[in-house]
Image (cartoon, rainbow, N blue to C red; front, side, top):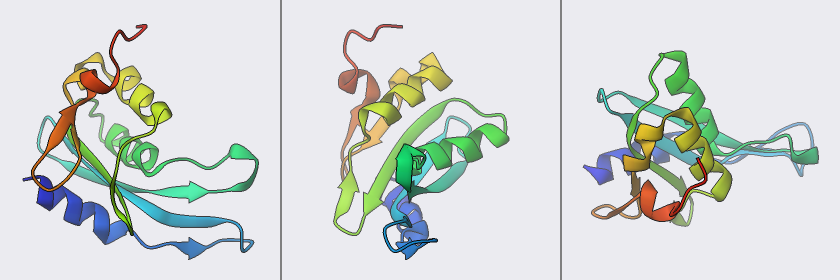
Length: 124
């Protein structure tokens, strides 16, 4: 089941240049599956002045457009393989829904870690 999500994240993966050589998009792709079984994807934007965002943010925005908030599982990938979500992405997941403490964070094709294990003693 995780391999299918990894493959969906790989489909949107593919870095490309934006307005300047130092500005890119698509170096990381993300796919998430909601509690309703729907899959949403996103790519990262690596921009100047800190205004870019992670692929997880883009996928979550797509999910929110469909008025869903609870994520069953999520994965981010780069050309080097599966990536762990950064602290900002972990925080975003639980601020969207406290139910997302139960989100499975995919670490490879067969294994995952619960988001609650990545955010012990959370402040909220």
